[in-house]
Amino acid sequence: KEVAETFRKLAPSNVTVKIHESLPGVETDINHPLCRAMVGAMRDSGLQPRYVKKHGSADMNITIHEGIPTIAYGPGDSSLDHTPNEVILLSDYEKAIEVVKRAMVNLKAAF
Image 1: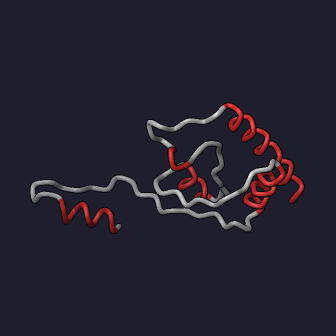
Image 2: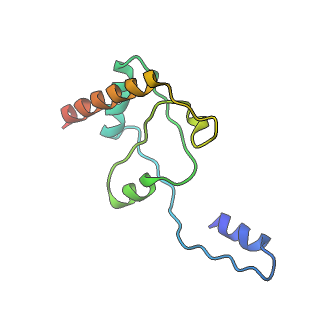
């Protein structure tokens, strides 16, 4: 709402600002079984998990509001996401596949 209001205030008088869609931000509790399963899988794979608050919109803005627990995980440097310098090493990609497999096993064991 603040961003929309800022645009409205900055817009020239002959410009109308309309918001066609707005999605509220989301955050998954780090104690959720899905998070614990992923963190455990990362540690089991020799990785150091870290929590990152991303800004912007993603599928999880929709799924969480539909009651579907959602987290994001992936290889590479997240500060380079969606930039011309984004790169993912094949070895990191392969490790990420193994991490997700371990997370599924961990999640199944949690229930």
